[in-house]
Length: 157
Image (cartoon, rainbow, N blue to C red):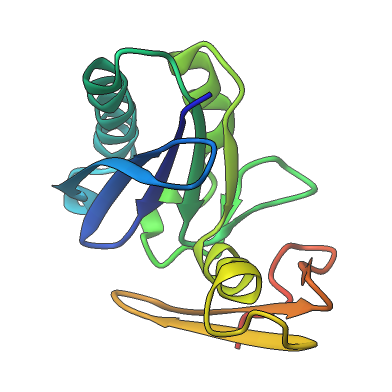
């Protein structure tokens, strides 16, 4: 089974196709149309996924790292520096447009977990990962498990 991982950033949206071993097979980068609003970003995510799947030749599982987090209370995105995403049902809209389950997580949490499992923090009891880009965020991993907190923002600072 192939997987698509997408990093939704403030200025760029980048997707990769990986095999079960984690080898990167394809990579594509696009400008994030934040100034054009929510629908433009949603279309970019759907089009990028569709294009990567066409190149891969198969339907893939999809996971997206986003600025902000999905609210446990409302199911909508919150705390995003890409402000047009705040209050939007991004997960629901993507699942509907792609006609399958999609996983969404805070981009800094994704980064911290990846570093704790496979990167510079591998084997460390505690990993605090920081991302600096269009926005700033952080994630915390303790003994290989991501600390999200009740509102999915435990590592933010």
